[in-house]
Length: 192
Image (cartoon, rainbow, N blue to C red; front, side, top):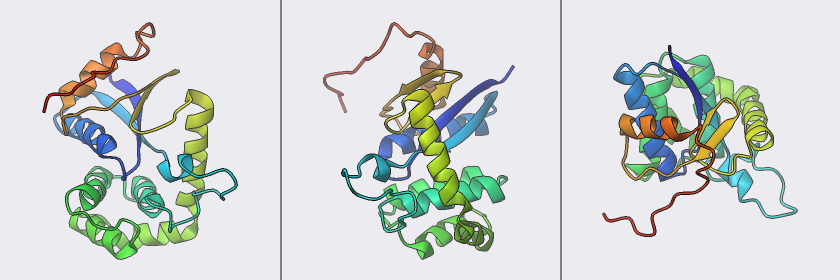
């Protein structure tokens, strides 16, 4: 039986990249996981009181990339995993400005996706609406405060995995997610 869970992402966060890539690699390796990739807007979380919402502000860091990721998930699901990976790589491997639509389109094309269809979906405003809806639901239903957060049923856990793309790390997190007596476990030093 497939393990069902959700994972939050924002292309700005290197820890979200590590964990999302671990999930992608696990799926590619045949893990029996049914996964919903759920956007979470760090720019919204870090808004100052009195500032408007970040959801529709494509000049806010990461927002446009989130909209492109959502659009890829919705209109190009067959290529979503590679697009998702490519959007993280654009930010973290290539150091590109993911507020630039040309950068996002190039990443999508290189991943084999349909950049024109994704751009049209973003222009429709639907990804912006989904970003707001899914972000707000994450906060209200599971008290999500950051990325990456893994969600199984009513349990949610924020994690920071140090290794990039290791499916076994996800296995460990999923094994512990029901153990609610463990609230926080953090190394004071991480040898690297």
